[in-house]
Structure formats: C-alpha cells, structure tokens
Image (cartoon, rainbow, N blue to C red; front, side, top):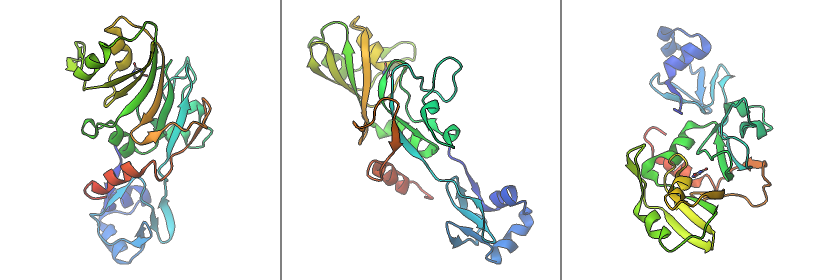
Length: 244
Ligand code: URA
C-alpha cells in the first residue's frame, strides 16, 4: 500500500476546486494553513495525514491509526471475505474499512496482528532492510530434535519462489514446542520450514513484531491502539525519511 501525498497546488485544485493558476494568489493571501501554519509554497507536499484548511475551514483532517489485535484462530487476515469472519470485522470502529493489515497470519494462526490506515507504517514493517524480528510460539506433532536449529539458522531453499530463507532462530521450549524468530514473512514460512522435517504444525501463535509485544490482557478478538512507546521505532524511521 502506497502513502498518498500531493503537491499543494494539486491538492487545492482537487480538494477545493481552486484553479491551478489561482493557487499562488490564494496562498499569497495567507488563506491556506498546513498543520496550523500558513502555507505559501505551491511545491509543499501534502501528506495523507496533514491537516489542511482554507479560510479556516478544514479540507483534510485524517488521523493516522495503529491498532494491535489478538487474532483468534479461524478468523481470516483479510479486509473482505465471503466465507470467514475477517480481522476487520472484529473492529468496532467507524473507519474500520480504511484499515489494512501490516503482516498477515494464516487462518489457523493466532496472536499479534497490527492494523493501520497508514501505508508508511505497513511498509516500514515489511521493508526487507529493516529486518524486523517476528517471534512465534509453535507447537508441532513430533519431537523437535537438535537438527532443527542449525537448519533454521542456515536458511532453507524454497523452489517455488527461488529464494533461500534468511537466518531464523529456533529455541526448543519443550519436546514439541519451540519459539521461532523470523526477519521476513514468506508464504506459510514456518509451516514449510517444519515441513522439511515432515513435522506438521499444530498451533502457531505470534508473540511480537519488533518491539511490539502482544498485550497479554487482550483476549482473542480484542484490540487496542498502539502506545507512543510501541510506535517509537516507526517514528524514528519516519524522521529519517526525506521530506518528513
Ligand atoms: N508462518 C506460517 O506458516 N504461518 C503464519 O501464520 C505465520 C508464519
């Protein structure tokens, strides 16, 4: 999902019907404010979440939203589905159809799922160079042997995509339960990695994404907004981007 930003002259012509050739005059008269400050430059970029007003009337005032949801098993990570309840159906929010998922979980997986209306946030979480760690608790059918951790760390070749998975960490918690840390999100990645050992995954639960831990007080199906502290890594990334 791309973030939407437009030059101020284009924004004003689309949002307020001001002809492009009249925009300079309207700006020179100090009639336009961007995030509360008078705007004079037609080249200024107007991001999706900039507040813009003309003669004191708001033209745009959309708030960025970031939610963590405890995804239950059997709910699909999609915005629309004709067969199953979707994670968006679980949100009791007016703007829920503006929200998209930042990193899906399979139908039968559970745990931490992030939803947002901010394309910059979901892109940040999925940028390969960010190598954001996602931690899962995995229960499998057969005992996990000492051969697993080195194979996960080395990476596995997936012929269908023609890629080798990035080093993943596996820590054995009990005979059939492990904690797995991935820094990418390939299709059914954990199931396919255990599949190499012919060991079916019985339960898969995401515990964290980067510094964001699933809030243990959230019951399956519950959600809450992310805190400023949970968003700090993203804010640092935004500040490092040109033009922010
Ligand atoms: N790997 C999987 O196989 N499924 C998930 O839902 C997440 C990671």
